Length: 348
Ligand SMILES: *Cc1c(COP(=O)(O)O)cnc(C)c1O
Image 1 (cartoon, rainbow, N blue to C red):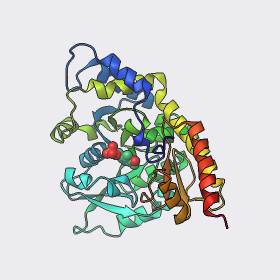
Image 2: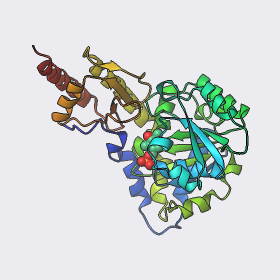
Image 3: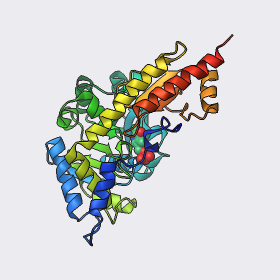
């Protein structure tokens, strides 16, 4: 049995549609560095998807997408406000601070991985003097690091909050597709119409081999962003292999299908886990992650049986991820083994 399948959505392989798109792009000699028909098509598809004339760049991974996008919004004496469990804070090795030449990240708390608006206001207002790094950007993650999703109402509120405090709004959308599948609304309503200035849109966790899109809804903010990408080593010379899957997966609807499938699998997995009284959900399952509280002995027994999952992410609970590649029968199989292991453990 595949016992690695819950560790992360980036443990999955490349989905057939992305693979096919790369194979189709693999013909002949074409212009390099993004000046090719596939990249042009992918940018157009994204403009169609968001129903606006956004400016699009493709980079290799999410850390680069986030840190370069945030660097484009800030000067070195500015600050970025984000949730204390945000990927940009906890999992990017200081890349944001590095690429922005020292912009400070200010952390706010909030339930279920979502920023607490009052804490943002306090952070902005507590100091206005020259000795404090000037707040410039509000960064949120959608879907969040804890597998929850900001509703449209919450997004509107965050957008208003950012405007009120004159903050640019960045959305870390490494799992934007999962949030999009959950909310089931036009993409524009949950991005630029809610005030998002820049979205870093993840492809990798949704089934691509590599490649995230940086989408600037405010085109002015994209000024010289191409130079930033190049200097950071993020301008792919054979760009067509990053962009072709985007064009194809948007056009065919694969992006949404993959995300909806992963989300459905997470719901099924949550049911399986909750079939044991000793396991409790710690966050609502709104995307493709399931966070549970379970006894240490059970975690150890699952690990000993070869099941791999993380216990250090976010709030420090056991995290189980689903992906486009998850299979429902395998999840049910896990449930059976889980109950068997628990029965052995808790027998008198
Ligand atoms: C995975 C992830 C990223 C991107 O990580 P890379 O490993 O750099 O591609 C960014 N933000 C969030 C919330 C993520 O989960």
